[in-house]
Amino acid sequence: MSETPTPPRPRRRRRRMSTARLAVVARRWGLLALIVLTAIGALVQFLIR
Image (tube, rainbow, N blue to C red; front, top):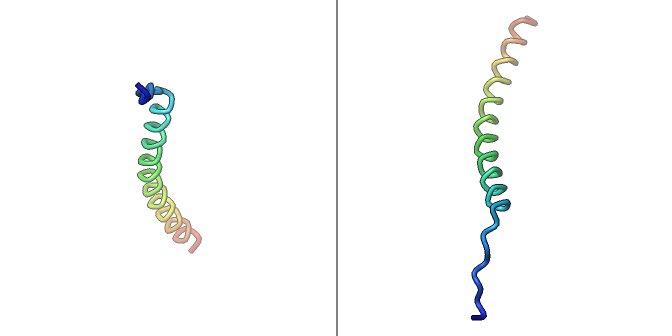
């Protein structure tokens, strides 16, 4: 019995899940932020003109 099953660590699993979710959310929010920033930039230029 040299090979012992490694006990699952909920903390690591939770961290991995949270990081994965944060990555997906960051990508989505990143795209939204880019669109919003471009829109604000256009509005600012239009207002300045």
